[in-house]
Length: 560
Image (cartoon, rainbow, N blue to C red; front, side, top):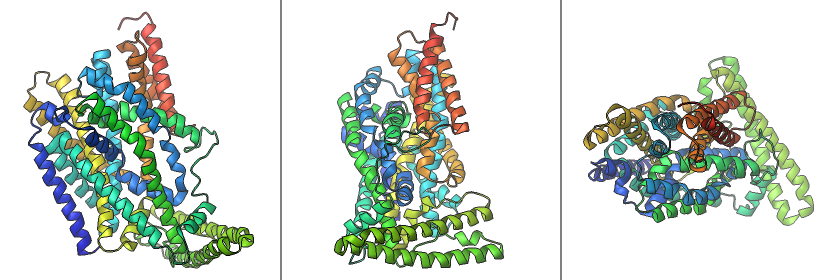
């Protein structure tokens, strides 16, 4: 990192904080602070929704996922356009007609205060966990850049994000999201271009994609039906549908965006923008990971593991010697892989008959590289006492070691932009639910607008601190993009079930909704503990169980 790189990052931080203070001037009332006076246009809301979901987890975690596993993760998003259309027809007009501040306020009007409180508590728990993961992602990048501890970098990110969220409310969050999307897209486009430019002169982009394809990294569709397989067409079209309906239709961090829209039409357009753009954008991020893999295939040297200072964790002399031998073997293996990949690319163009043999040789060298990386990970895991997964370090390592002056700063700014947009939106949603669904509803029903806004700001500070503490643990959980969706799947299905029950069953009552939610959530947690099915399917199970139990209990002749 040069002075110019840091100038880019510091300028970006300064601008966001100043802009947050400016937006805070219009956020003194509950409507202004929590709903931006319902004044935001569809482009602002749409980009804000997109930025909230395109977090640093996506840039860091999905890029690493693409490096390790290719494009398969894009199947996870196949149901998103369908979910957006369904919500445009149902949730958007329903929430706007109800004129509510939170999704859980709507449930009180349909059922009772118990349902509002319970769903609000589960949202706070689920989103509180997810926000920790969101803050952990940029801390990985920053700690790699500065050599700081992850605790210090988590604290820096958490304080900066909490600061402008406290001051500006949802208006500051939404407008900063728009600017952050511009930074993210600029960084993504520049890095994709550079990855292509860094291929050897004799290797075209088409050659590089064929090399990646030989390893299966360009396989984006898996037609197998397996309950235990995370990413297939069926989990992407069926299981993920429940997750996206819940995330965009029941999660306050998303609902709050289109509640702030100026009209039903503006809210619908914002979701349809995501329906059109999200899948191609996610595919581009995964492709960036694939191209980073291609870059290291043809690079003179590739890291044995991407975790910074990994060897420093080895205190035992024998372990250090074993790691040094693995590193030496890996250098030889990657050179053999590079030569084999060059021969494969050349034979495809000039000697098609020899391409099959060259491809087999390349795959054999790739298998040896994978074996050595796995051996190094096992050695580090034994030394540290915790599993080693360097997926989250792939993108930061590449950005800081390979990008030119200025572009490295833009890449880090893109990571920070993604992290801050998501964490700010989630902190604001957590504060809104805390202030309105808990404080005003149960503790201080007669509180003035100024007191409620003050409670929201204090809640933002609390959740910011909570997220920072949780991030210390989340950074060690492996692929962050999987972690955050796994956390969500523990809660989303049952929460969606309550809203489906409210809309689809006119005989459902508050008692049924409470029992349905508790049984549905308990069933999901039991399945998650046994690991009987892949986590995406938990969303559908939670929803269906909640609706079934809620409808049954509502019809039992028992007094509430």
